[in-house]
Figure (cartoon, rainbow, N blue to C red):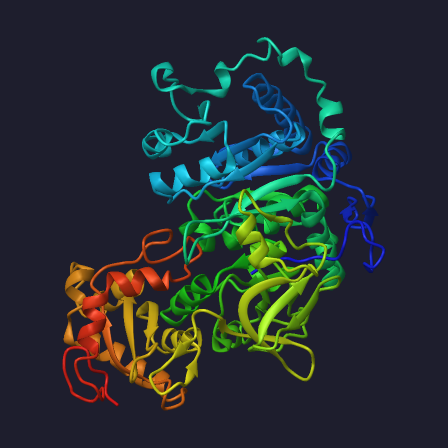
Length: 588
């Protein structure tokens, strides 16, 4: 998903200035040439004693004044390590207050902070650090082994700073406490002059895409991009301008967490509750009661499944939020309807990292299920001749870092961002995303189909299923690889008096497979005959976010999956008509 923008510096925007919020919720203008640094300093001065950051585990809690002091202190230490304007600073951290401090500390020096996914392999870490020309990386101790392997291929990296471990001079690992601001050059820093010199068109962060079709690309986003995105979001949902409570639990390497906690808190003065373990986020909702909340479809699906299994849904925790959003991937309308019936109105939106997260959004109280809503103010959305969604506006990226070819492929001469998604508009101007342009299934008979639509129907029909990948490109019929949901299968096993059984064994259980088959049959009833899944294979292991099969935001890496499971896929096509019963059959 994404959060998109009206312009923070263009007269064509309905509001030419991003806005912060006063203590009573009234919006105040930040000016058309604002930066995140200016907004942070203004908010910290205005709300000095108010809560700003805290850990839900009972750890650190900072007021806005304490937040400001720590940002300046960290900035001086980064400066002492040699960080200067337009340098890059890498962060490999869980969701904790220190991320917010360090990210802003780098920004106040005119440097560019960026985050690495905690699940990244050493090869992926090396690629990102090399592309970013990273000189200083700040990380937690648990990631040091992978970082050490990655350093062999990254000559630019000069310092690794560990937040929660011991220094190791032999490996070039230091702690922030070790860094003295009295070292040569540190005293030269005029902190206020440094952050005031940061310009709106300078790069505020680099967001590395998940890489479904190749190595991650570094999306360059400016202060103006980020503030334009928030500005247009507030125009669409004015209640967002109020001070509130946010929850930080998604990977900070993904733009969603930054756009739904880090950046808006700087603007509005809202408090951020940091949840280090994302699996604990749902359990914390009633306690935090966020006023702005985003979850990817799989989280909504799991929460729905848990409610259906008897878990009490504390609806008021989200029903009273200013905005609750599903994004990053398509969600089945039935899931949205399930929560709507229980008082939680989930607004589906659409966008890309390259458009600063969001370009269209269903407004609260006016959502059209099955669509991702109308364009946000300041964003132009149109369809190319082949149905590809094109975006243009002040929140569209300036390009990819060190990749002129990819930038030229994504941005045309007129400034249109080519998304690679196929869409259509309804009569009310609401956009529906059909599928990825390069992921459409075109079967042996030439029929075009959306694998995402097929997969959503199957997951909706069977809570035992975590992931589905539809196969059928240039094939005579469709099949599917199915991954079981470990939590829901565990509940199923308890009811069967098999609580000690392993997932690998349960994946072959005839009773469980019959329930999966029943779910596939139910999904098929909602699909055209040519779309229906004729055979499927249930895998006996998990796919983990950020692993070989899934991106950190749970998008399938289809090319890798097809290659890895070539044998299983071939077995499902040993019958040309897809009608022969067998271990992979689900019927016709």
